Length: 245
Length: 113
Image (cartoon, rainbow over all chains, first blue to last red; front, side, top):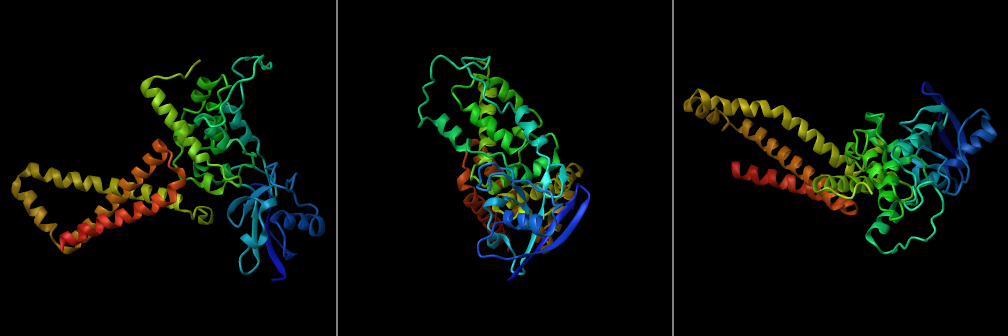
């Protein structure tokens, strides 16, 4: 195969595919292909990237029907035998233009899920006087560690059917972040956070299709995190728990 | 719907659970209608039950039992996932659920004929 036949989404929510032929190389990421198109074939193509090494989470797109981080996706792993590549912006998000999706709703939901650290000992945001002692092997710390490496690429959000069905649903990444904080011994907003994720748009809406876990490029398990939130809310609602304080 | 993004065992497990649930919900009125026929006397119910002995109805009943088993297994899958956090073993559980559903259906089938 000498040429890749690349179909690229052009336009906004309403738009269509444009076809480009891109030289195939032995080592080539999907982001390399998009960059080739923009630099060599059509400078008007809009897309987003920054680090190129799988750290920043900006370059995710829909590649041949699946959400992926394009900077770490080798073309040979995803291309069909006929050399066809289909590139669209991430699903479940408004399209700014071409391959650039608007991630504002995604990050707004992190805020709504209280997905930010609120120090227990210094609620005004000041640095606490003493360091918290956290045993690295404790169950809570291991739960938090399992989800902490999220890069915010929105691949899980774009892969989630529940987000597509219910526009208010907080989504896997925001709930995963909430779960890491629920398990953080230093955090002081456990009760408010559990309240924030318990509504109709929260963890109980998850149908456990596990597409988020299946597609996460960092091998995080947001579906397991959501199950953890459901479990915590179930037992604490049933038995009465340490929701506040 | 783009199935390229959904062709993984957990999603298929979810779809089987959902579709079997909907089909069972459709069957439920028929079930109650059959039970309700007993109100009009024993003979009427017996007549209906004799009619269900015909092989076509038995075949449909086999499908029904498979649906019930699939829905039960799907429910157990979700319970295990959410209460026990069995995420990593999920794929094996899905396979096991399908296997069990089929087995229950076949056992029923062999008992019928």
